[in-house]
Each structure stands twice: as structure tokens, then as C-alpha cells.
Amino acid sequence: MNVSFHSPAPRTAISGSKAHRQSKQHGLEDMELDGDHEDGANGSGVKASTLHVVTPGEVITNDTAFMRGHGTYIENEKVVSSVAGVVDRVNKLISVRPLHTRYTGEIGDVVVGRITEVAQKRWKVDVSARQDAILMLSSINLPGGVQRRKQESDELQMRSFFMEGDLVVAEVQAFFGDGAYSLHTRSLKYGKLRNGTFISVPPALVQRCKSHFHSLACGVDVILGLNGYIWVSAHVPQNLDEIDTELVYSNKNKEDITPRDRESIARVGNCIRALADEFIFINDTIISFAYEASLQYKLKDMNKKEIMHAIATEATTAVDNMKG
Amino acid sequence: MSHNQIGLRIDGRRPAELRKITSTTCVLSQADGSAYLEHGNTKVLAAVYGPREARHRALVLHDRAILNVELNVAPFSSGERRRRSKNDKRLLEMASFVKQTFEPVVIATLYPRSQIDIYLQVIQHDGGTLQACINATTLALIDAGIAMTDYVCACTAGWVEREAAIDLNYIEESSDTSEVTIAMLPKSSKITLAQMESRLHVDKLEEVFRLAGEGCKQMYEVMDKTIRDRAEDLARKMTV
Image (cartoon, rainbow over all chains, first blue to last red; front, top):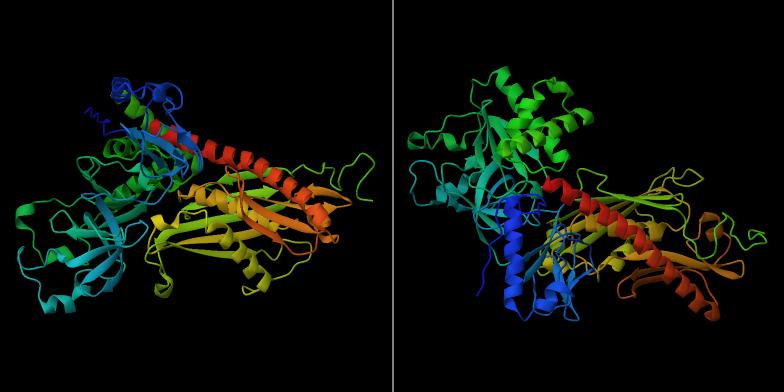
């Protein structure tokens, strides 16, 4: 059986990039090697254009050899799109990815969320998905020793860990039967968020990558939640060996955040907003470039449309130059 | 009287001609999907929130999403300034028409235990509010990335001055005409809503329905272009 993997980094079809051209060729070879679906590739099959945009009700293919994925349904043995977006094809699986939509998670995703409710042995967390995610009391690190049994007293003082309105960074651990996400914060990377500001962007703009925790050169930490929620905060030096577990759930910001730090945080935040406004992928590289591009402007001017546009354009050109 | 000698209507249109349609999506930054639509001088803004955690526990369905439609008419929308209460029976009825129109089309089983909120705001009223509301809702739902089996396109038609005509404006609507609003799935030509408030002779019904159906197909072309342009624009921006 032929298995081809699409390159994970830019997920959309990039007309010029090498990685995509390779995967595209691979995909086409794959089709031809199959032999029995040759006519599918040429005639009735999926169009080979780099950007295949479909709208609801549009027939993607009437070749019965294809399987339907997300964003499609089968009618009269045809694969029909149910959303407006870009067609993704992996071998025989066809799915349509809407570009402007809510977050759909996968296990292992790093998400930023806001506690909306404290319930029996669990918290409900808004992660901009179609339902609130659930953080069980048993899937957080309890203070006082990393490995400790959950006690009744913990249940009674759940609000001392996370209160309604608190922001947390967590990882998707599992799905419930109805599709709700179960989160966990059982690592010192995860937990309550302090010392910074919150920004929300379309989830499609944050891509899965090796790390979603970044420390920028300007002394600002950024957490890129895959659900489009982003946390920009003052840099806190991390030494994971000697973290006081009591402090993990503290509600106090650190004391020495200078006005300079605050300005950097606001500036990075505005840069992310400018990039999101232009619908550009957000990662640590482009944020750094946007930050440099923004230094020529005053902070208070950065929410003007034309300046946001200028910053975004300069950042994208800088990234292009770096790629060569 | 309103027809002149060469068979034009009061605003100079031919019987099977729509008014000028302008539409854009993604006009609100906070909503998950939004659309602004003009049928001539009828102007409607639609906002879609969701699918999101259902606010009323009692209404939650364990296997599908619930649709919630709210319609509001601006006090300045018609010639006479008038504030309508939120419980205006006509508005509630219109909202339930929109809800019933979309329930068979939205694939709600993909979103169990959640809720889709649709808020409609009529900014200016010049006839055909229901069709404009349905068309704006379609655009907003697609903009929000909510799965639907097809577009829903709505169009009115009526019997004006001894002739069938589509997309009636306020003057044509108010001069004692029988008017039909239909909402159609353009790919399969299935009808999800047929609404009529006055009487129409059965001999004329077929002709009126045929014209309304054609109007829906025309609407589809316009709406599909809006959606496609927007999707291509976003896709292109993401590849840069």
C-alpha cells in the first residue's frame, strides 16, 4: 500500500514552496500508480489546481473510490462539500477545511482557555470550541508534592486552584463521548496564567509545531494556544527543578514588571492583532519580525488600520527574505 | 398605473428581475460568522455565534445542536419611526420561519450538546424582509464554517397588476398583492419554506412559484460569488 505524508508545516497549498511541490508530485504519482483510478485523476476526479476552493453543496468528486472526511457528506454516491473552504486530500480521503471557524482539537494540542464554571470535581473551560472543555480535578497537579492523592479537602477548595475567569494553559488529554475535550495540566509548563495579556485570533492561524511556548528576544513570553487564544506575558525565568508548587496557583503577578516590560507586552500584543487582521499565520518568527517592524511606530498608533497593515506587510517580506 | 406601456414595474424593473443585491461576509469581528445583505433598499445584518456551549441546560439536545434565531427591526427602518417590542408577535413569527427554514439544512448532528445563535437586524425595510433575512443567514452560517447540505436561497414573488413578478418592493407589497416567499436549496431544487399570507388564485400559483424559483437560482449565483471570493481571498492570504 502506498502511503504519502503531506509536509506538516504550511498546511495550505503553497504554489511556490518546494515542500508542497514535492508532496503534490508524490500525491499525483500515488494516484497514477493505483492504476484502476486513472480516469478519476483526469476526468471526474479531484481537480489538480493548487487552491481548490469549494462551497456548500458543491460536488467534489463522483468517484466512489474516495472516502469522505470532515466537511463533506455523501449524496447519491458523490462526495459533496458541506462547508466553504479548501479541499485537503490525503490519498483517498477527501476533507474540506473551512478557513474561518471554531476550534476543533486533537489530543496533545496545547490550548489556552478561560475557566467558566466550577462544578463537581471538574472545571469547565472555554477554549473557543463548540463545547466547553473539561478539566478534571484529578488531572491537575495538586500543591504540595507532585504525586499526591486527591483528597476530599481538595474538592472543597477547588476555587483556590482555579476560579471562574482565570486563564489556564493546558493540553488536550482525551475526548468524551459527545466530543467534548478533557484537558490536563499535569506538567510544570501548564497551569494558571499571570503577568500578561490575552489575545484571541482565528484558530486556523495557529499551526501545530514543536513548541507553543516561546521566549522572544524582546523579553516577552508568548504562548500560542492552538485554539487561537494567545497569552503574551512578561518573561519569567524557568527552572523546572525548584518550582514552588504553592506558587503555581497564586493570583499575584510578579512584582518587578517595569513600564518598559509592559510596553513590550502591549507592542507584541498589537503585532499579533495586526497579523491576525491580515489573516497571516502566527508563529514566533513572524512575531519577532513584526515586533522589529513596529519599533518605528508609537505604541498608541499601532491600532490604526494602515499602520497595522504596514507592520504585517513588512513582517511577511522579512520572513520571505529569510527563507530566500 | 404602476405599469407603464412597455411592461416595466413601478421601479423600472422587468417582472423577472431582482433588485440590486450587495452582500459581504465577515463584517463583525466578534461573531463567528456574519453577513450584510442588501436587496435594493432592504438592508439586513446577520450575526452567527456558535456552535457554542448551550446557555440553557434544559434545552440541550444530546445528539444535535439547537438553533436559536432572534430578529430585531430597527426603529428607523421604515418610513414611520416605530419601536417594536422584543415580543412583537410578527417578529417572533418571522424568527421561527427562519429557524424552520434552516433546521433541515444545517447538519446539526455534527455539533451535539451545543447551540447556534443567529441574530438578525433589519436596518432598512423596503419589502421582502423575510427573503433578505434568510439569504443573510445563509451567508453568515457559511462564514461561520457551520456544515450545511446546501445553500438556502429565498425569493418572493407575487401577482402584481395582472402579471407575476419577483422580489416585490415595499410599494408593490403593500398594494394588496398576494405574495409568496419561498426558500430553496438551489442544487436539488428542494423547497424548505413556502410562506403566503394572502389568497392567490390557484391558476396563478404555478406561474408565481416558477418565477420565485428562478429568482432563488439567481440569488444563488450572487451569494455563491460572495462566499467563493471570500474563501479564495482567505486561502490566498494564508499561503503568503
